[in-house]
Length: 99
Image 1 (cartoon, rainbow, N blue to C red):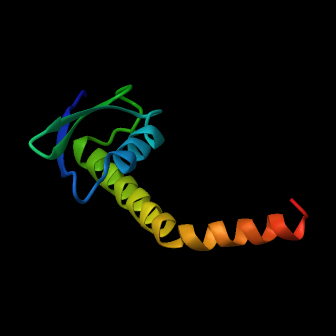
Image 2: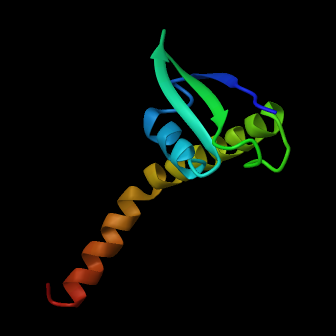
Image 3: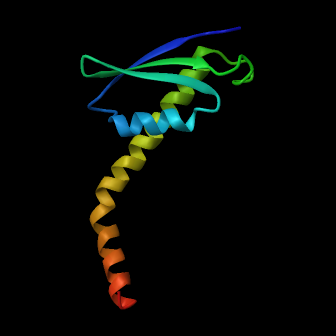
């Protein structure tokens, strides 16, 4: 049973770097084409193999993709919020090593 899914995402909520990470993380089971239209990302989703989602259809793929998108959005936000702290820690560590 083959299915296809189109998902539209607001580029203000999901930056391209987040969308690409989510797509890459699911590349083993889903083929996803990313297009940009009217300030939105349009994802065309297809299973790599009919058995790749263990018999689940487009609904399960949508839930899985949204879960990954939200996960990578949160990771991205955390990285942005802690970038100054990471740089400070790295700088301090290098100074203590004499570098």
